[in-house]
Amino acid sequence: QFAIKTNHIVTNSFFLDIATPGICLSDEVLYLFSPPTIKRLSTLIYFCKILKQHMHVIMQMLWRRRGSVLQKDRRVMCDPYFTKIITSKWSAFSEAKDKLHFDWGTNIASYDKHWVDLSINLQTSNVIIFDSFITANPTETHVDAHMTPILKSLPHILEQYVGFTDYLIKEGERTYAWNRFQGIYHNNRGGDCGPCAAKFMKMQSNGDGKEEMSRITDKVVDKFREQYAMDCYEEFVGDFQVANEAGMK
Image (cartoon, rainbow, N blue to C red; front, side, top):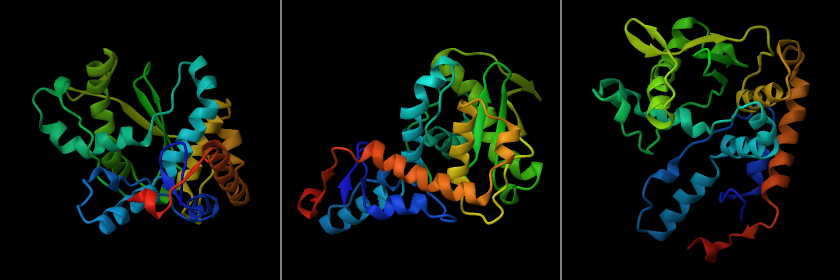
């Protein structure tokens, strides 16, 4: 076990999971629960936490390496927790009377392991979905169910925190629109949607589009999963501190 620069405690199997084709990557947030008083159980829960942050680590790696390029074009990569907080709080937010002063808090629920790349255009109030496994949500009804919390929360969040007030009006409510980017790689075997979503983001930062994304194959996915594992290791393991059993207590 060792600590990486993101303050996660991991084992070598953490990076092996990122590199292995077909293994679904998670980003669960069990660490938000208060640790119990029993030291042994506390260590177990802490250990579960650090083994569930694959996508968080991948996104931090990409931002460290591509952030300066994106900022020149006035673009950012949002942490996965951003959309998780929105979906976790959607029920309470939708019932709140004062949506501009809603307390979003930090508690996050756990969801399934399907990942997509959302490209949010603030100027057009539109969200483009880059989905490598459409089979998981084949119809507009399926997509609407997942996207509604984000589309209807974004206008209020942006005004509340940064004073941005451009949005669409639909049926008397503030909202954003969505559309799914067509003709890109589809991960028929399943299990690779997380790394594929990260890959789509990276390709957009390089100026790549539909043609380049359609050329991705399973073999290409195998290669960039392995590359992501090596990049994360290189980026965050330098100057690591071994977290031995005594250090965990």
